[in-house]
Image 1 (cartoon, rainbow over the protein chains, first blue to last red):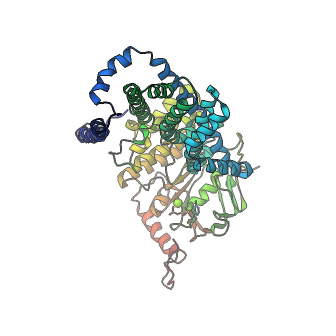
Image 2 (cartoon, each protein chain N blue to C red):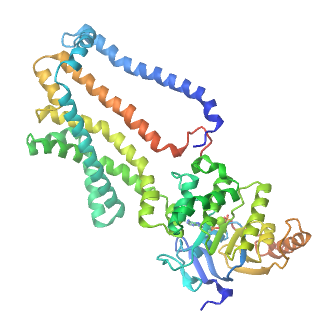
Length: 269
Length: 266
Ligand SMILES: Nc1ncnc2c1ncn2[C@@H]1O[C@H](COP(=O)(O)OP(=O)(O)OP(=O)(O)O)[C@@H](O)[C@H]1O
Ligand SMILES: [Mg+2]
């Protein structure tokens, strides 16, 4: 790594930018809290903020919440992985064109138009209350979006780099490793980041209605028993995990893998 | 058998990108083995297209191109002649560092693992870009990228080097140093170089022969032997004189003639 002197000079500017970020973030997070506060004062079914906060320590340490959290995370990660594989296959077939390309293209287009919730409920009805059903529902709902993003990646491949590969006679493994895959990495990240939150929502929805384990099922149970504080806690945990993984895991690893793009402050084209 | 005078043999070459507009039309030329050939032509006439065709990345509509008696193009076998190509745009892999970009083509060319690093070092040094060894291409200037691309082409020590205005993005002083180094390198090797340039002076300084093309679609207009002995000096008055003659010579053909009201084709 060469470290240019500008990098240190830019640090100040970047710090200021990150403060602004933080302030805006706090404002964004504060708004729902404020609405919650109003809600708890004007209605009877919204529990006061203080009560929920006081319940947090017991909730995260005492109860057996973690197995259900893990089950949900497992479902999200698993079905997202399946969606990636399906999405890549679909994108590849669409990119190749031909009869199958058109068939898949129509299918993906159709699926994009179907509301996720309705598709989820129908599919769960078909698959009854099974684990397979959850995986099926989530991957089938998210993969068309993945396919579309990856297709964009395949279509934007730089033919000029392929020609360079021709001239220098790169082997097929070399082309995959050094030309094709690195080009698709940003698109894969974009697909995962876009569909990550989507997958969470569909998994929890499926758990709400169709299975007895996972965060969604626990939320439903708490809700059915009028344990609104617990329901709120599950909602908060859901958001913390979703946002936490996005900002602490996905974004940093994306930034690291794509660091070749430059810092944006160094006059890149 | 190939005659050594026809090491790179181009016959009746027609190239069109869209199948309608010709970019190169009925162009024939021969480059001898070990020759330094320059290609001169007005902007947009089809010089890059000619190199694309010679390298095989663009398929001609008609006509043939052979290097050492073997046809070029898709499916170029392992027995075909290795080519180093400095594209007009650098065509580096943006997600690989400078050293990795070169290492990849070295490995593809079958250079032994132990030799890869020393080779990279040698050519980076030659092009005065050693300190960018571990930098990503997007963090380099245009001229730095171009030199990485030159290092990549030369590092595989190919029999044929195609260069498309390789020094056009460099400042004049650096360009002169690079030209001198290229001339020296070529004299020590038996490489065949086809060098596209806008600069008549550059062509005269480097080449043994200059192929002058017409306005687009490119045909061969004339071939000029440069008999000034080597080593040459860039400021040599003989080059100045030849330069003036060539300008005079191409003026009409390139659409700037006294009687020609036509705009030159872009
Ligand atoms: N990829 C392409 N697709 C379609 N047309 C192209 C393409 N590349 C070049 N052309 C056309 O072919 C003709 C020749 O282009 P070429 O790049 O070979 O010119 P050139 O002599 O190298 O020009 P310059 O000196 O400006 O680099 C031009 O008219 C150009 O518009
Ligand atoms: Mg060109």
